[in-house]
Length: 359
Image (cartoon, rainbow, N blue to C red):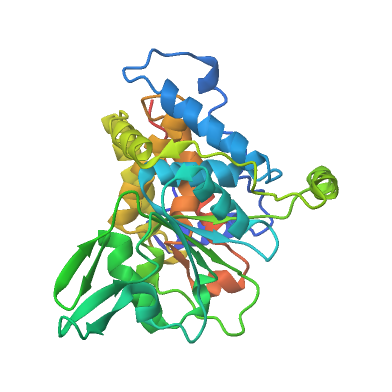
């Protein structure tokens, strides 16, 4: 397929003609099938990372039916120390999966329900006057934890959303001239409903860019729906989350994150990432392209996927697998193309196909 970066008006017409909302898009296929048939010796032993995360998957699967891709991407975010936005209609296990992931980790967990009347101090904390000291003390808010679940993040107004900017990017909060560092790990798992618009606010682009990835959840298929019903019937009065064990400590997570940073990325791979991101900025179908932060997110996510697959090197398939979750929420389709039914998923798919794969 030809490069989607048109050099003249006639090329633009060709690109526009090739794009169709009915084009088949499959971003959930199992990646790296060819490379899994070839075995290379690892420079770094990723066995412990692979085995521990497989155990986390097994614990989550005790409650969640299907949604394997969502779970894998959540583990990628954990290894990359990145925040995640979970988007899906009500009832597809966004919140419970985030709680399950936190339950498998021997770390702190807090949940914040976003509402239209929520104030920044309700999240960050506030200064409280201590009569004994005749001074103000800082009472920390619920954001001070390791895994923070923000439910329905798009229900809070812009002022409250802005309160998250510093803590999501710099892992710190500045209050009354003093800086308070967040303990490691610190990951925000936010949920939002893409259908209901009443009483919601669109997230600012600057905030969306701070999420490592956005994971879109679909409905289960027939077999999965039946299994959900069978499990619920067998549970009776049992607690769904009661049997979920803690697998990883904060020390484990920190160690794994450091190990993932050592995953090899050859110069050809770095060039491949850069070309993909640059193409989003030059593509006439996109009103807004991806930022340099997106390039770094692609690299870190690909490293984590490689570690998840028990490898210490990145392949082009790793980048393809995380391309849409990392880039989809960072680009904006031009209004006229959006009216024609052209989606960011379709454009990113064709950009990936247009960039030459490194050999």
